[in-house]
Structures are given as C-alpha cells and as structure tokens.
Image 1 (cartoon, each protein chain N blue to C red):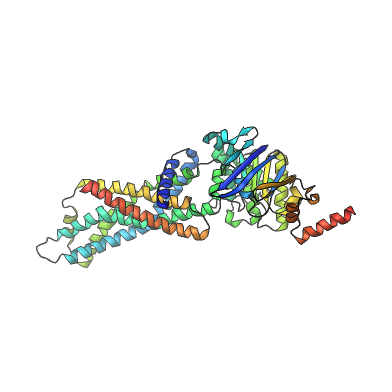
Image 2 (cartoon, one colour):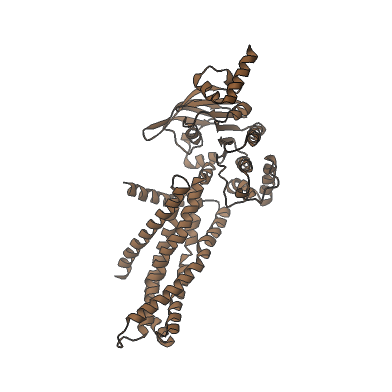
Length: 245
Length: 255
C-alpha cells in the first residue's frame, strides 16, 4: 500500500509542478541557478568518467577479439555502439542519480527540515512549482551533457586503442563510421530526455515529502538514489524493447 | 480580526483540537500559551491554512477561509506574515534578498522601490548594516529580526509567530517581544504569537488564550493571569520558582 501511495503522490506532485507558476522574473533566476548546479557542475565528472570508461570498453573489446578472422575495425564499431546506445545515456544517468539526485534530495529535504518550505507555503507560493519546475527545465539540457559523454567516450576509446597499440588509428576511425544507423541517436536521446525527467522529479519527490530531521535527509538521499536508479533501469528496458526490437 | 469558531482537528485516531472558539483582535498582541503537546502548533498551522480543520470555521475580517477557492486562499496567504520558530530564512539568499523575497513574488515594484522598502524595514528591526550577510553568518537574535522584517515587508494584515523567543537569551527575547508589539501597534495588524515563555506573557500579553489538551481552558490578559484561580493556568504559570516568588510578592502586596 505504501508503494501505491508513493506512486500516487509522485504523480500528484508532477501535476502540481505545472499549476500556479512562479513569477517569471523569479523563475528565470532559479532556472539559471539550477543549470549551473545540475548541468555545468557535472561536466567535469561526466567528462572524466566518459573518457576513461570509453577507453576501457575499447581495451576489453580488443582483448576479447582474438580470432584473426574478425576485422580490427569491429573494435571501433563496438565501442561506438556501446557508448551511444547504453554507456552514455544509461550508465551516466545512474551516476547522475547519485550526484545530482542526492544534491536535489538533500537541498529540498534540508529546506523541509528547516521550515523553509512551510515559509513558501505560508506566503501563498506553490512550493512544488518553485522548487521542482526549475530543476525540470534545467535538466532538459541534460542531452547536452550526454552528447559530450558520447564524444569523449569514443575519443577515450581512440586514445586507448592507439596508445595501447590494440588497433591502428585508421582501423578505429573506420570502425566508428561503419554501419551507422541515425535512428540509434534518436533512440539514445529519447532515453536521455526520459531519464532527465526522472532525475529531476524522483529526487525532488523524496526531498519534498521527507519527514524528520538531519538523519532522515541522509536516508531520503539514499532512498532517492535507489529508486531513481531502479526507475532508470526499468524504463531503459521498456524503451529498448519498444524502440529497437 | 480573526474569528475562530469551534475548530476540531484530528490526525488518525488522535484528536488534537477539540472545539476551540475565540476572537483575535486587530492591533493587539494575542498570545496562545500552553504546555508542550497542548495543540498550540496545530492550532497556529490551522489558522495559517497549512492544516484544514475537520470541523468549524476560521473567519478573517469577515471572510470564511473554507469558502475561498485555492487561488483566493493563496491571495489571502500573501497577506499573512509568519515568523517561524527556527526563523526559516532561505539560506542561499543574503539577508536583504530574504527580506526582498515577498516583494519580488507579490508586487510589481521597481528594483529601487523594493530596495528602499527593504532598507526601511531592516532599519525598523535595527539591522541597517546586515544587508549582505548570509543567514548562517547572523546570530539567533539577528535571524529572528530578519524573519520579522521578511514577515512585515509586504505590509501583512495578519502576523503569526511560532515561539519567536525560543533559543534566545532573556535580553534578546525581550527585544524581540517588544519589537513584535511595537510593529503590531504601528501597522495595526492582527498578531498571534504561540509561546510558552512567561516573560513574553508578562511583557506583551494583551490577550492570552491558554490551551490544554486541545481545548481552550482560559482566556484573559497579562493583567489578570496572575489572579486567576483556574488550576491549570496557575499550575502552568507558577511552574517555575521565579513565578512562585512573583505570586508571593503579589499576595504580600494584597495583604
């Protein structure tokens, strides 16, 4: 029953997010602040992880293709497919559920504990719109982050293959251009938008409706990470089944 | 004026408010006192519209809150100022930004008009040089004064204060009490203060209602609270040695 209650309350929160909008002059500042906090401040960690995991994918693929009958271009091809289809949209989103999700839950949860949300409500402000909507808008720029992750993942693969001597530069570049299906990019970015929505709303839900004190803020952050990850993995499966099979 | 008629509020099987009726007058500091667990906070949050009463009505200057649409309720709330127990200042904003916040949200004033109003209100609460400090850099007493400034900046009709003195030293507490009373008289607003601080009762209790177990046990003012023979009130008032001595002084004077 508690799960059903949470799911119902989550959808009511989403409905409330679009009701009684906050004054645009105030909302504009909140959106820019959240773009800075959620997108710009994540660039470093996303770039670092994408580059090195892209390199590891390339090394693993190269080391496991021992048959001389398999062309070396397949290493670049496999890296590109892994990075574009799964690594960048899904794996980075799980990391972001930890980084951005915890930040959102703890910041909103702290506002709940210190009665700042009550203060907004007493003033007649739609606190859900004020707090959650700017995060939702800011995370609509999330595909920009994922594009960088895709580029750096493939670049990391190139660096690893050339530096490690697994594949030549020409073979790798030929591989990443091989049998490219543009729809795979559409699929990856549709997933990214869905995950961005989950990243903005699930952690906000756990922060907004938390009860208790500082200890509960920590617990809410952990719970929000778990459920955001579960939702991302479940929807990844459903979307893949719907769009690629 | 706020008129409360027979309000009841329960959470699950537990009935917190059991039918409270009273009137809070304009231009007076109205105090709600009682022991912890007596229903003071639920009562205040019900007056603020954060809780919906199960039964009864709350009438704000002739307007029944339950008859209002959600947007009308929001409009009414924008005419309320609230000083929270923990101040509830927005920690990502400076003191001036905190005070300016209601003006940015609810008025169409220009930047210079808003800044002038913020300067005036901060001066009123004796904080003319704290504009650019963050709430975390301010003392407890300063935070309370900023909370009062934020509550009055948009010229509210109703001011609610939940334990405005908690955590403050007696001298700062008296300053805050006097400030709230002065502002109530100056702006002619209806002020309701939730407290269990007997110093506040003595200083500014122009009207007092005493709650016990969700019921209004007694109603009066600081002039007659020491003379009541209501056992629950006397137990509460004379629970400290200091006030026992005050009672003895009163009795000695009478003799």
